[in-house]
Image (cartoon, rainbow, N blue to C red; front, top):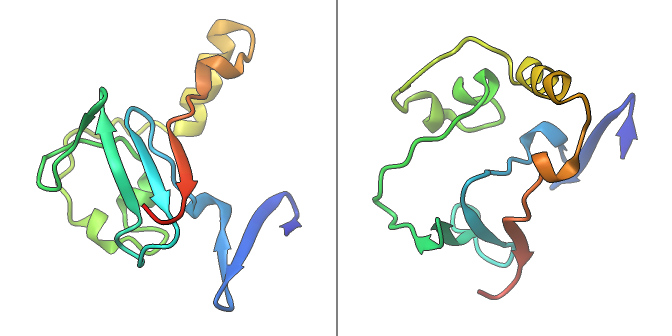
Length: 118
């Protein structure tokens, strides 16, 4: 459902806003929607190799998510390795301005799929 340019979905009577549908670039993975919440990411790989559950990994994220926004309070407790204080929106504007064109190939990599029964 779209209202005022914002996309939302409903799950169990609660609104789930589009900014809470995260995707991670730089790794590949499957989201198995038949698995229980907290166990749905499978076949997580980096540079084609499987990642161990206890392997440390650094993620870049916006301040909303870093502060636990969207119902992820455990992220707020993770160590911060670097904080640029730059908004992702502005970084995207700067990248497009520098290139002069928007080429989807520069911004999109098909690295995840929704599946069932994995």
